[in-house]
Image (cartoon, rainbow, N blue to C red; front, side):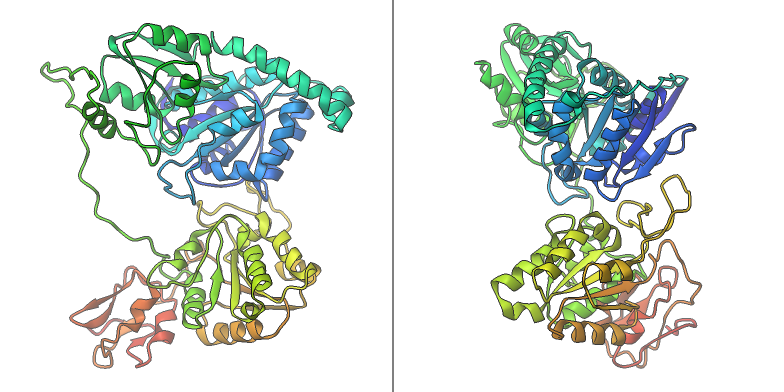
Length: 590
């Protein structure tokens, strides 16, 4: 039976069909939906971990105990998980283990667009790259088998377009795979130097066997066509090449580490001009050039952003490649073309978002604000402009402490902001470091009771697991005090005066302090409040309300206007208006 699935849904289905019993990860676009879908299948265990390092370590433990395992994360999450990943290649596995790295070319929801193909090469582990949903499903099964056959964790690398695009897949019944028995084997699992040296040698032997396997695996194949130009490609770029350059000869690589040297040489010998089409870095191109072959790639196609069929065709034509013309027969599809740009729409915090008040006040107080990853990062954009930095998960607290170390006067002018889920992910150690080393900074934990940016996933502070089961909810105040912070206060971020006073007092106190700005996400907990009304006679047209960046507020005929359908009556704008023109409740009088 065939079903229409996204790549993420297909990966989840592939894991289920191929006997995976344990799924662990940390939510991060574009990977989040994999584990959410996997958790709905019967007879499995799925959970969100506090961060990606923990997720992979849990996965390694489940593999050690004999289960087939799926571990999911976005590309920057692999940075966090890199420590166990590098050594996991030495220890190997018991039950098959697949690590999904969902890369984000174009940075749709990320702070960078790093190319994680290099992680597979760095760790010396196999890597597969699906180009559509059917391959995503099939490659999970293949990766699990390779993992067990070669005693290695395997990376399945997807990109945003594969993760979120839909295509048909053939759905099959689940294969029940029994647990592999655990056998005590310290030289395999206990990576002290003496055993590690032996496993390093074993790793090299396994990699050599993989190099032979990659020459014959069916996911690497040649499609001969017009031999004036031959394209080497992988992932979603394969689909783009088929559409943009119909009829060319293609070497499609589904397994991209190790790369098939013999197959590449065979393909190169059969075409007049060799071209590599790949998003982001010249990973394939550099390998091919390292074989001594004449090849071109990044001189034609950019090393940044997502590709499109139109971009590939226009660049190929401009470079003078002998691109076959599209089929002109009646009813044939038109050649790919670049669509006109979509009108820009700046991202904004949602109406009623509890973070809005925090960033409004921080901007007003003219503080240096070190920020973090989350939907609250939007607080750094105009008109709020309440955040100065954003680097990675958990960096805000360490950076605030670093500012203080460099310039002691900044300790009373610097605030770190971090979300509740991000604090559990990697902010705890930053705060511990600040306290331990005598820092005097102020940290604001934006506690909206969810992992909001990636779609409202549970975390250790919500009281519920991914499987919907009740769980102990972390007491943030108690946790922060246990780290050595004596000054801890909880405020409502939509009460401007209270919030302003709290920030001013804590920044000036000369001791490490934490403000917990607590109010649930407006999308999860909708309070039944009437929309704000506008007194047009009282409105002076000063536009102060626009500084909140609320999508419900606009200006019509030089006066403030509130869209009743959008407004959720949070009352923040009422507190900001100096002339009493915005009032809680009732109907607008315009």
